[in-house]
Length: 119
Image 1 (cartoon, rainbow, N blue to C red):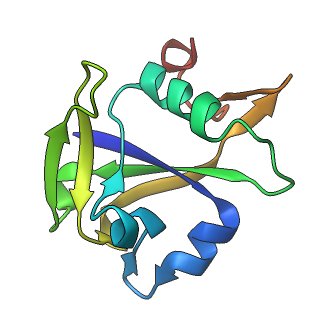
Image 2 (cartoon, one colour):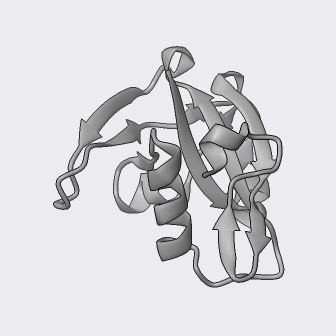
Image 3 (cartoon, one colour):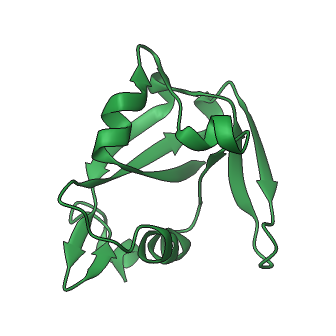
């Protein structure tokens, strides 16, 4: 199953350490935030990454089956389960890393994603 993680380009470049990626939240919260559904991905992007920086927002697509760290589906109190990765993410589990599109003040999925996923 594919799960998704959003990261600013500078954080992605800074956190990429050899064969492992560690988001800041791994040290501050104990896990890496992810989502499974494209509509939730856009909701997260436009809520928590609303500020459009000069840098790019990167969408990581992860193969959950290739992750060695524990993945737990948890509700942060909004009635929805999100995958949380309790450990670093192996680069081998990253299917692709693509730039999110920022159009008219809103984040959208990369143009390479199928139209059905973009709506």
